[in-house]
Length: 241
Length: 304
Image (cartoon, rainbow over all chains, first blue to last red; front, side, top):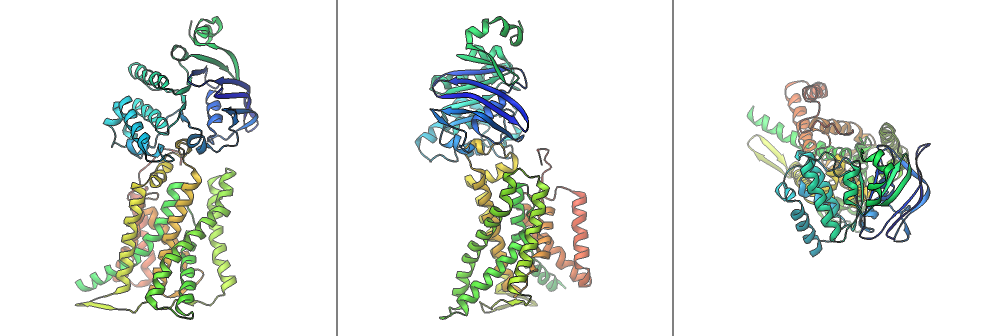
């Protein structure tokens, strides 16, 4: 198993946000976490990537194993540079004062300047032609959808083989959304493991292999995408039917 | 009349160089940490003292080195040691607070206290008597009509300009410089790029402190009387220069420093010298009233 979340508890101060959740992701899979706002999806991703969230959450119990090794004491930047896990965060968090190219370059901070780096630039510019077009533009001048593409492109440039996506469809027009998911599918076919958070459960389950349903800090249902799509409870609560 | 204006502008550029070099340190640290490092003026003072001790060691030691050789050693050694000093200060005073997630106000107060500790520590251990910096290079005066320039003044001005362009290249072209700019926009995303935040902060303090060290050397050579409180006023002025230029922006700090130097000298050319700071700061106040973000600052809505 590539990623194994074991009985994970996370607290914000005295308030417990995750009440002992467990799930796993296998190599090459697309797994989605679905659930309403405040279910603890973003908290889970922040715990995995060990980023110090602005609100100051803390893992208070359980473990996060990656290839069998605990990530709990690994600093956030090593999660990216040594474990090759990248996060395209909610709200994009691009460096608006830098150009598109500089944003991508920063993502290669810990990588040697070699052939694979050149290949990744080409790969990103092929996957998202808009990025090549806007290369020398200050990234805060990009549209919301383009910023989302930049956020995903940046994650790819870190040389990750496991990518965590927090609401990649947010702010995207239906057309761009379709485009984004086509690219993500392609990445997966090239070997990228994907853990996806989506509010749009329908979309997420059509795209993913497996899914987990979260509700107020707990996992309340799980199964293959097909099973969840046909689960009457899930249908009623999250799929609008 | 024309000659005296040129002469004054030349003096203004010399003082502007001191202010600029110090202001760059304020602006770098602010850009990366959103911290106004009020101890920075005192890091300049420490730089001047480090330069003094190194100069005495080589120049008056046995065998004594020549002034030029001494200077060639004083510049890099002082910059390195002042950088080490600045990084140490960050490590023991600011980093623990950051780790505990302290409110920014407490960090600023800590910086103020560190400045006072440096001033009074110097007073306590080195005594109240002033140190006089040895004359390392022979003064050469060039006369062009009524205008006189010294090799030292030209050196000061050229140094600050060269240093600015080197710094500008580092900030705009290297990955670490990009990270320094990126962190000022979005701190959260820096570790997501695989970049250790602490490394960026250490580099910031190295750059800022070594520039303060260089300013310390140049100042001590120009005005060779050192005392523990020499960094206080000049530090405040450089800070104001950085704010007027637009704090967080290195071009702003550089221009702001020279602007302050020019305003000060021009005021003295017209008014009695006791009016210098009053009028100079009133002018700067007016600039801020008209453009509160400073000359090159951009109003930013993101979390400050």
